[in-house]
Image (cartoon, rainbow, N blue to C red):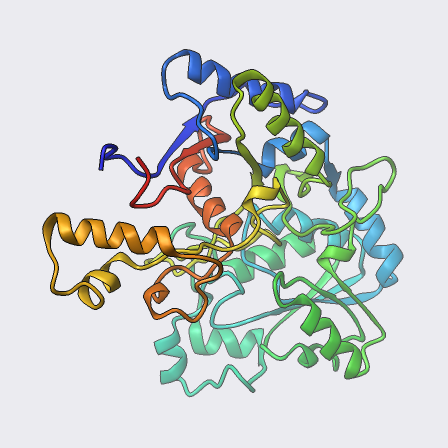
Length: 397
């Protein structure tokens, strides 16, 4: 082995992005400036990734509370609506909820328990078991919930989301009733007009509601799919993937941006002669071991990426080879045997025992998770991530 360093992930600083900025020029320029400073040299199959937030900001893709309210009212009638399975997030859902409530006279808020879809817990599972509550069948009123579990705050934010969401709805001019259930059909005795706010299970939720007799059912990806009074929009994902921008406005998930990643790739090829892969990334896919939160609030990890990032890893497990096929070898003989096996691999390794234990996920989901952890979500100022060596293996010199 002549090269000792494998995969390296680096955050690249960039200017603060504003609506209308030429993002292809900014991303390319930021990478080339880092190269000029000597941070790295560009190699074929390096990866440049940019966070979805700067893409949406450059697109000017924003919607206000009033825009959301107008769309919700037009689609759900403006009377009593069921808002079911929202995630518990001040950043991701609170402003959306304000708009939803402004578009209704009454909101029946149905929260899943013991946690929301991305792992924010309303109640402790052990306490739930002690109280004899069955989350698969029991529907709890607010009064019953409080009697059993009291006032529970989130371990990281200190927020009681039941109170927080209830107050947001009232402050927005609507009545509120809160229930707790995990079967979407539990909302139907309260209202036949429903907004399903779950992310990755939304299609099944809608199908079950329609089959059970709901009259109007929309998912978050069906709200703000077209401009409202000149607002931003997302024709594919609607409100899904949105983030708080101000107290009365959200930044939506980026509109189609395949042309952007291909433009950055072309500019870098022209400037460096190297073929670099490019992607846009949002939430990764990993779980916090303390708060139990999954980073899965975006509808997809990557809404746009170049062709070389399609597919899944096709890797052998080195320790499997060392402990099985080449258990009798050591030192240089072992190293050469494993390198030879890697060079022989051809086509898909699905079903090959020597591939067991390798991560069976899409490349964009894996790389997006790496990028999300690298860039962070606070004040690092590195919305661009540069990755080298991701496609290397043990034989790469």
